[in-house]
Amino acid sequence: MRRTARLLTGTALAVAAAGLATAPAYGGETGSLEVFPSSAVPGGDVTVNTAACGDGGTAAGDASAVGAGTFTLAPSTHEGDAIGQFKVPPSAQPGTYEIVAKCTDGKEVSGDLMVTLASMRQQVQPRGSVKTGVGGALGPDPVQTAAGVAALAVAAAGGTWLLHRRARGDGI
Amino acid sequence: MRFGNTAIGAVTAVALCTGAWLLTSGRDTDPPPQPSAAEARPDPAVERAAARALPPSPPDRIRIPSIHVDAPLMGLKLTGNGSLDVPPAAKKNLAGWYESGTTPGETGTAIVAGHVDNADGPAVFYDLGALKKGNTIELDRLDGTVALFTVDAVEVYQASRFPDQKVYGAAGRPELRVITCGGGYSRSTGYQGNVVVFAHLTGSH
Image 1 (tube, one colour):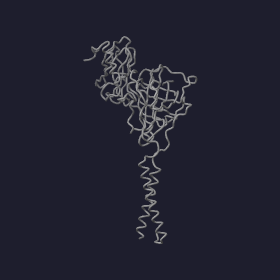
Image 2: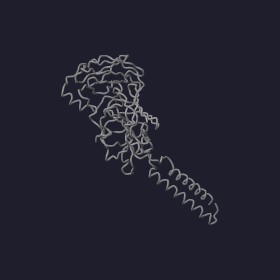
Image 3: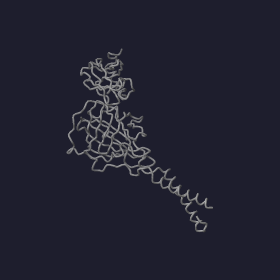
Image 4: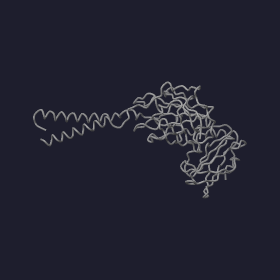
């Protein structure tokens, strides 16, 4: 059972959090409880969602490990996920806490929430430009153009041949 | 003899049609629209008042009615060199958001990126450069709210002089950046930079 806070505390935790903050739980696979943000500050809002309860399924959430008590996960329009929210108590201590959700069918899923004293999420900013295009909207492909020119050359040769015969009176 | 002439005539006709088709088919030959200088600078005097920040919630869809964008969003991470990763190019109607950053609607700078084109032609943000100040961008969020952003400016930056802090830096109010490729294009090096749309939260429902 990891219901209670793990032993990591204080400075050691803050250092660990800095390293882990770039890998939020959102986007995980079916069957787990996704926690967003995965790293929150005391007083912050947290959203959890899971696909484990099936379409239209609801779940009972339990964030008592972090002192936030119970909450409800309701069905949403997002890919059949059940979604719930809770607030990290302002008195919460830094640490990693297990958040649990139990579907009405009895299935239980869990995810980790890390509480840190300072928000880590904004610290890693992207850098530089973004590679979001290859030029496919910009005019024809050179290979296609070459093929087109070659085909027209064949047509020109054929046409010339036919005209030449006609001029010689071979008849068409 | 007559048979030979018929065959040559047929080959000629087919080659003519094929050549014409190859040279005229398929591609949209217009380059993507680029913003005018008038869209480049935010004008605080006419900006709509900022709305109160929303609690964090991941987005799952972006809509920009003025340029007919309605696309799902995937989470994006960083590449090895620290730049923002992009959605798979093959999916032309898919955009992404930087999932380790701010969620759209909470205080800070949320970042959305998508392709201007792929090998087959225009993609989700082909018309991004045609956005104007005051246009609306809507983001559907997982918690059921829709964050409404109003465009403050649309700029083009060269990749070699990309203003990281201005585009990605933290903000004291809920802001949004929408990024795609733009600037000049060369066959050897591709697009020379990015079109960046700056917007801030002006409402939600």
